[in-house]
Image (cartoon, rainbow, N blue to C red; front, side, top):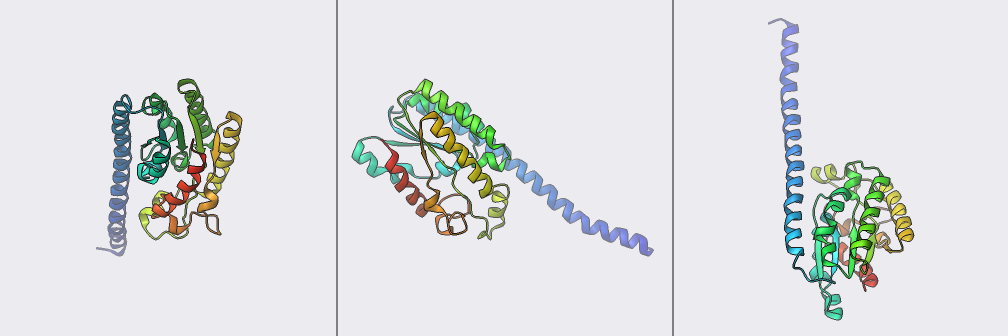
Length: 244
């Protein structure tokens, strides 16, 4: 075999593992995306069914995985004890404002909540959805809530910051790659303007959560995106003040 053929064979042998690795990665990520979509549909159907007979006039937390992972019933047990108002979780992981808009009526508003605590937008940012489109979707949710459950006290939260600089796990780095605090800050300014315009409560707990670099404090998160229990406790103390 001449040198040219040897060189070509060597290059091909080097490329094959890379191509296989990339192919497997693409396959897995597509599978994860499909699994996420199926999970959203499944949980939405479950929530729709259970919400038909759920107690009305409760406090409902509505959002994505940051909400779903939060044990709101336990965290807000003192509020329930003091007011008699149960706290219900209606978060679904991987959701965007588009899917939330589709399900809010049948999974949330059918319960005519006393308080509706909303946190949304971080997954839209990861999918590179324009901030204005996020605002448009949330605006529609606010309008729908006013129509279907006019006595609901709406609490719109600012999107929490992320922490990229202290991540070591490849998975953490991957899930944070398209999320940045500059876009989050810009979105939060727009969310506050929307809340003022719509005369609903806006709460920005980020002053409790950020470090000196404007990132989510590492002691408040396990992956740079989702709060841990310390983070949820800090958030709870701020939200408690807004509940009726």
